[in-house]
Image 1 (tube, rainbow, N blue to C red):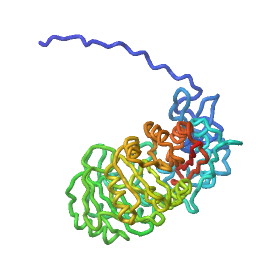
Image 2 (image 1 turned 45 degrees about the horizontal axis):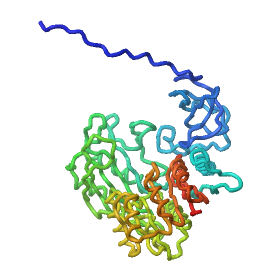
Image 3 (image 1 turned 135 degrees about the vertical axis):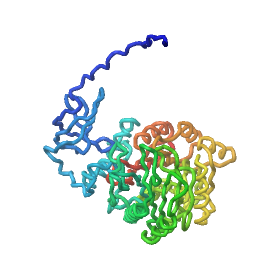
Image 4 (image 1 turned 60 degrees about the vertical axis):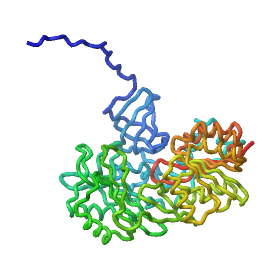
Length: 476
């Protein structure tokens, strides 16, 4: 008989103390909403305790059901509106209350623009320590919005799954991986909706198995559609778990017949158990490897995996403002840090003496060089590497910029890059930002040498909480 041994116990953990807050999970409370946070949730207070209420608006009194509490703040879902704001709008999307794609459809568009301007101001004041009102303050302009803030997205990335034995495709419910089946999204270009609906129908008819995220089984994971808004060209990307697609010729033939404007049908293979959409292998099943689109006069080649702004109309607004702040007259040397595929660089090259673009992603630099060649641009040079390494190397070669443009990811500029900018001392810095909080943080560092003259918010993503900004800094 095996000898029985006592299992040794580790040190006992003390029971988790209950939070001393005035609300509890599951409780329905009445609360007055005084503002909106950066994600578009209403902000209220109960006995001084902050409660974020999804779907509530400033100036409203609401009933809300508490679903999560922390020491200093909690989260709740809107149950009913007791006193409604005059800015409340009826969302036209039938799945708005379930989909996590938009957060502000219930707020009239003019108020969305005012809210986004205020978000930029609040971050500049709170994080950057800047004055945004009165004499000597930074000018934060009203947000530049769209005349028609619908159907603006030129790219759809639709997860495919199975529900009750049927293939479904749509967008994830908020804070989940549960797919809401849909054939129409009101912020997607009509061509995207039509292509996704057609592929879902074709895949079902050909018995192509949908992906099961839990079991990691099935073939079709995502349908990605890109549309060239100016050219009308459509690319359909099928993301699959395996290289072999059964009845692939029938599939391709049906897509060519049923998707208007299709110029490229591509397969991307992603066999990994991951939330990342694309795998490493991409093959063209039919047509061109790329489609084309224009931002202003600049033509861009768009491949299955290349980055391209999803709202080209507002991108042109954003880039025109960037060009205005650069103040190019044809004599300036400009450095574009975080240049990506060269979108801003090529825009600036139209009116600058020379533009130098740097980007850490080699594939992006390949696209940038291809786009420069596509447009016959000879006064742009692109180099791969960290901006804080490449830019000082350019300085050693005698390249002295008049203007440095930065367009970093949401995490903001690398600290070493900010130091490099201060050492290079260009006359101007133009900061293009997709995150007001990191913008404010980085401007505070640059304010050692530069005056932050003005900031222009631009609404690139109507009906969401996101806002882009362009800031002009001039050396003191």
